[in-house]
Amino acid sequence: QQQVKQSPQSLIVQKGGISIINCAYENTAFDYFPWYQQFPGKGPALLIAIRPDVSEKKEGRFTISFNKSAKQFSLHIMDSQPGDSATYFCAASMYRGNTGKLIFGQGTTLQVKP
Amino acid sequence: GAGVSQTPSNKVTEKGKYVELRCDPISGHTALYWYRQSLGQGPEFLIYFQGTGAADDSGLPNDRFFAVRPEGSVSTLKIQRTERGDSAVYLCASSLTGRTNYGYTFGSGTRLTVV
Image 1 (cartoon, each protein chain N blue to C red):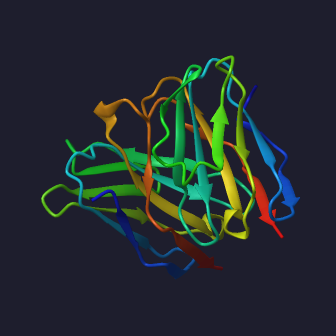
Image 2 (cartoon, each protein chain N blue to C red):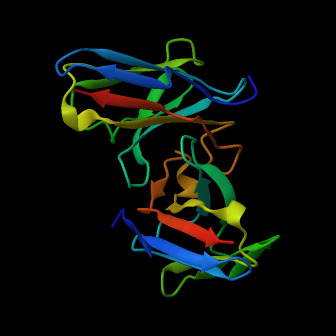
């Protein structure tokens, strides 16, 4: 119940294309869903996050789509660039629990070809 | 400081030895977290400090792992009798409070290799 399942494991996209990464969760107590970007040798960095009271959040080229009934959420990267090549992690947390503990997905390695 | 600082960045140790990993959080952040990231996996929660106390240590895998934060700032993760399976990147994060969206910032991690 504490798991967050992420797919695909790896993704290759042409420059300018759309990258889509999907996540699913079981625990309905989760109410905060961030996405993290990680470059080799660095820690994860927050990219964008959503609460379940909205179905979509957009920040620049990055959009989270959230489906509460299906317990799924996804990250869309529009106009993908070679600089977006990194590992992406979805995560979930219980915002109201005030513990800050994040449950991460397994990660998706994105390669954007020039 | 400007970010979360972790030292050393790399640590190689022999099986059975004791190691200490240090985390220096962002100044003013009361919450501090340790995660472990195995190769090709997402970070896995180990322990959460609010101030000086461990508010949630449910992720520590066994009693060989221990962490302290005696003055509510710097934290040390201690691993006794290291095993090859402990090899991973150990990440530290800090946040303003215990809320996940209040400046939750990760350090670059310590890569621990047990040989």
